[in-house]
Image 1 (cartoon, rainbow over the protein chains, first blue to last red):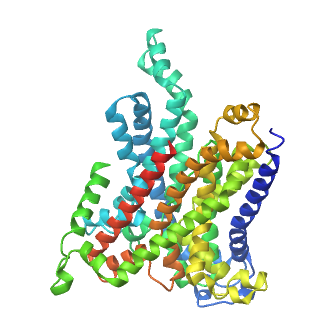
Image 2: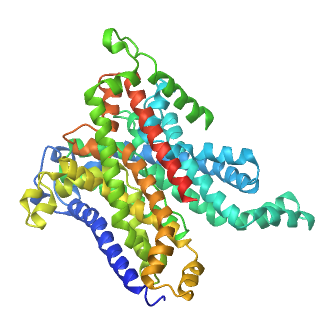
Image 3: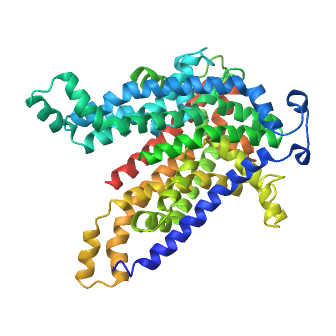
Length: 268
Length: 251
């Protein structure tokens, strides 16, 4: 019967290939445009800042939006670290307390933000903490709302699949101390999941726009808010270069996370 | 999570039902009342729901064959295909909006590549917005259905075959009912994502109102916190309801 299902699989495979090419085409064109010689694309007042010649668009982006790049790195590291520090224990504990009613409720609470659009969450945050727009702390809080659920889920899934409860019980009855149980049972079982959770959290934070946009100010925001400024004010080659820089940070994170078995997702 | 999310969300819900600050006369009604009384806002809500509905249905229909192949097929390059599908999922709406303008804007690349000048500027219409939404919903629908379909038990199909069912019968009476929950789950996830999406519309500056952009305008332009809260509440509640329905039928 596997033979008979083949036409469907072949048709589906071809459709997947076509869709994948269609998805890649715009990205390829934009990256190519970022490296195209600027003379052929026309030069605007941006030349006063970045001069002419090769790499002009990239120089312009780094000079104009460099602070956004730094803020983005700070927020991503902070939001990733907090997500990992809170999410890894939470995911492990929830996986081990699976059968208790409170665990279900807590898990629902932790993954709640994934169902709420970023712009709604941003407005809720701003009305609860008025006058904090542009504050680094509020940006981090906004990002943690979306990195924490992924970190909790990533670690929790692995903890559940590797049946940590019985393993830890066995280690304890065999006389392993607390440190030994963490070192020889927990750490080997969750090592990959922790790496995966960190990558997913970094990728989600690096690309996040919907929450950040309203929490940021023009001078203080993450790189995707600089992308917005670039899309609305700069020439096409500069906007393409800014997009390319964003992708250069994002693509390795996404591919590494996939290699470890998880994929980041962004609210659109 | 309680302090950073549930409490702000609760405050948001309350302010949707309270009159806005510093308002008089007709403007002094609660945001949630004005949202449904004002014909422009009602139209934005209807646009948003219709657009999300169309995009979610289209992406589920377009992606089912690809999802079946990725989930059930054994061919080289599946991991690469999955990687390509995963990439747009981690792009935010503004980037997709920029890609839409770059491809289908007034000076977009597609019209000249395809020798179809009539496509120029189509990014700014309803069709262009739908195409841009499909860019992030196609991977979402494909990978959601793939995950669900990969879990389908081969034994069920095998049993139907050994009982003498024809390939068509197996597909119609065994595989299709098993696909249905995967499709419902993918529909729910894509619908909710489209409903809350505002990055695309923000960049292409679409010619007609949709709710998330009106929300942004109410919040930053007219400083109508109550109306913005009401819009955010409606989006969050509808998205949560659809997601909950999709999850229930997915089990």
